[in-house]
Image (cartoon, rainbow, N blue to C red; front, side, top):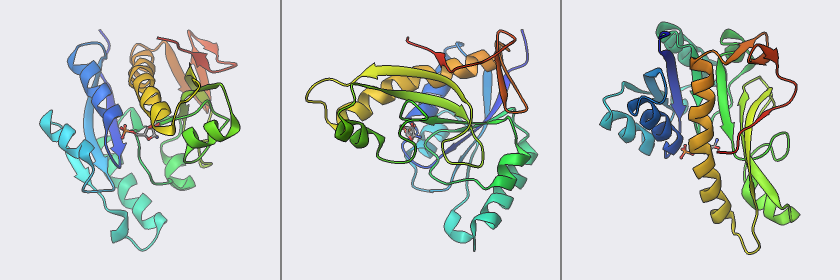
Length: 215
Ligand code: GRF
């Protein structure tokens, strides 16, 4: 068996994706260990989830720093001491600067509640409804300096039903996120998926379009 994937998970809020990753590890469905859970918000519920599972937590409050660069530098220094294989953004509501992203090139992942490149940014569910779209979904992508713009690794889609509210879509989206994120990490852990120079390889072949994962 290969060495467990070393993860640092960054959160700002509820941490349900963090929970899904913890659950997959504890169920022996994911060969990984979470070296630290980091939050920019000391009230994040995800910190409680982490503590309950005996994980190391660290709060870095962005309001304590004069600008984003200072915040990024402290976060970068801390992460370099942990040296994770992957930095897993799971509802982390801070934009990371180019220097930070470069320092961890090919090692930062994010999950976003839309079928990227559609609906970057916030309020994706309401925007999908406003457009009358019939398909929606979630994406796991590599993080680059541009918001929600890095190479897309994998996506799960789901139907928008008549009468759905933004809350309905958020709940459905969360359910699929909780399957998709652990699955992508599983592929990385077993080296089915590798990333090099911003290119993603699946089964050693260059990924031409995102993996469609429909659990
Ligand atoms: C998720 O919907 C994710 O797509 C977005 O932030 C949300 C985080 O939810 N980036 P949670 O904190 O994991 O419950």
